[in-house]
Length: 259
Image 1 (cartoon, rainbow, N blue to C red):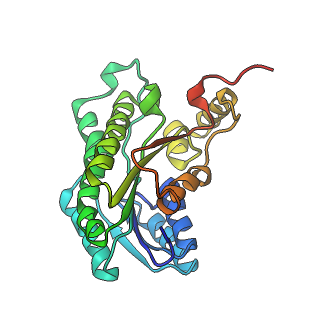
Image 2: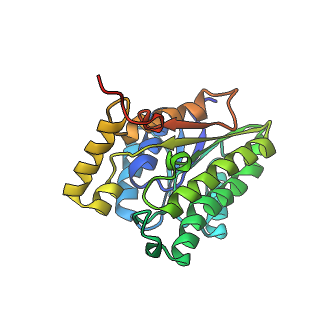
Image 3: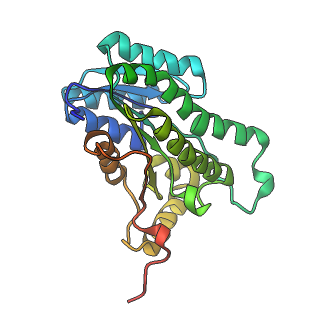
């Protein structure tokens, strides 16, 4: 897929991985929808960075758990540019709860996490599919997590939601072929503001150091490192659909061997 001149929606793109993906697409000449729910100032900063790269940008406040918001975001892209070439389902919800603390998660926590991570992703796919099918092509990348395979991560609800997203990726890849490719990228721990704020500065650094020490590649992820395969799945993976790609410095392989 030619990114230059293409139209891409990146949900949850005010900060973190979504912001990095949006800026990578902009740097390649794409037109981008920047989506946020609450982080208006950060979203504007990301939009400015994309504009500085020469991209045309729409800034859209929308909650992907609300179907009308998803359809409104797709409609805004079509009204402005007349097409939608790619979707990155990056918006996510979680809560940091030790997995042994079964009282730490309520039914409301599960509902909110699944509403964004699974239902929201589905609703966004449904919103963009008619335009992609009419064009005869499109690409969707779901941002999942290595926790979908390991059962680890910020909470049990989060891990379960990402496992559901992976299965949904397979179902959608079958259902939407041959016009639309659907894949997932599964990061491990990334060095992001979300973890820093959730754990506190001192605990965050210790957490990152432990993760890096245990991973075979001896590093914790960055948004830049994870953005690379996301952009590749949009741009260059013409024969790839229904894949879930681990981008976790090899941590799913187990602890790094001692030398």
